[in-house]
Length: 282
Image 1 (cartoon, rainbow, N blue to C red):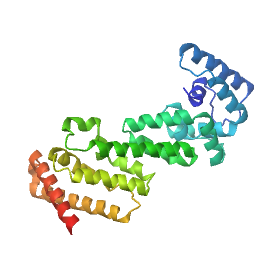
Image 2: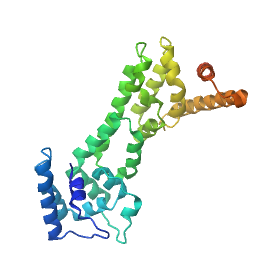
Image 3: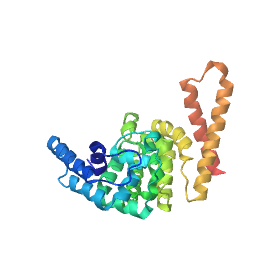
Image 4: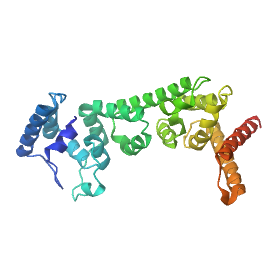
């Protein structure tokens, strides 16, 4: 539990809240005792930290409480935009909010992001990064490192021994558009090289054609969403995606109303791979 979860459970929030009263402080203290009595994992300094935030960092705490993305993330709620409609706009500098999160919430922030990365919930992280200007630099560096580790894991996992039955638990995320959108938030020459290495490992996986065919087509569709620093890498992914789209469109057109069979999909993948090989030689 973090101080925003404790604040939520305290029930202090009300519309147009501008400051905290002595009654609010007492509510926070009592709620902490309730939480601690029912959960041995509650940190002993949690209540003191919330009271410290209410007394000395009220502006930053109120800012987070009035920001839908930040508040829902840390309180683990899913309040609608209507919950955050207010006639009073709380103002706090980006640096002050960053410092507040770094002081009171950074461990929880890093832990939640690590869990989301492990669960392949890249869309959730991307949505949260809409407020990345308020997040501590150290936490963003940790997230970038986790993404690099994810790519390293994929590079190590793609080999002739990888089984189709293992894809879901290993490199399934390489098919996801949301993964490459997330990597783009932290694009760098290092990330370019890792993305390129993943592509080359799958492209050159001649000893394991089943894995190659399973990954290649969805990867081509998704990799175009990575915004590389290397212009040639962006051009390669766009060229591959255009070739895939053109091939699928021809197959769909020739198939008419009879639908597309599994064998046809397999044939499309083979054709696309051969076309990509031809393009790479041109």
